[in-house]
Image 1 (cartoon, one colour):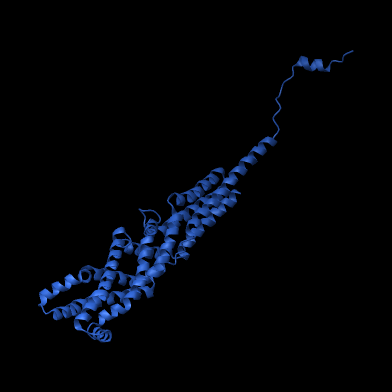
Image 2 (cartoon, rainbow, N blue to C red):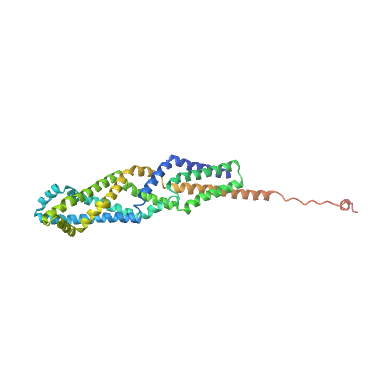
Length: 350
């Protein structure tokens, strides 16, 4: 049985080593680390709050645009619905495009933001694989190191089968079982599996393309608000440019504030996010090929089997030794008879 435990250790070690190269863990773990590093700021409390705030500001501005600014301009111009629709299509085509596409964009983005907020804890837990002070790129080296250790101990037990070798197999096997449990690898991997499901949506090529297109729609809407909608109000008011601008800002504060925030910061942030969804799509696709679910059990399962078989060999060896010792007859104490005793025993009594 000791030989079996040694063979199992060698097989388990070679399996871990083979897994590294068969699954291309070096390149895939490097890509996974790239994804984690890029989206870590966004998945922070501050990053998610900023994303949510910017989206809410966009929705509020869109509501004020369609529910207040455009109807007031229509009333000021004295146009019916058909005339005003033709006017907007001709003079403010990017606002018309925003009005047409905004509901679909909201329906796409709003659930994703909710999912990202719900997945925040999972993201930070998965980001600790294997542990906080080691990056994901260390994982292949850990596989190789642990696999090499199993092979070395198993080979030692094959070459020099002994109680010491069996004890070494038990210790190594138990260590491989306990260490992943202590640092929470099964839970971290489960969290990573859930995060990758979200990533498959957010970093899909079609999602990235829609995000880039949506950002351009927002750019166009803000441009038309500032260069066409606001001047149209100023012209209708006839109070001069400065007074007209103040009147516009007073009448539509949410739309004005969003247009300013979009120009200053939100546009650049949105372009960076949507562009990253496109650029990092292939990187994520490669990282997503890592078979996450079996990884904890490659260690825990192999370690448990090696430790169990090696431990059983120790118990069996002790029982065999005890049985052998019991089967050997006890030595008979020797005694030397005296001459008188011999003579007495041979005397013929009458």
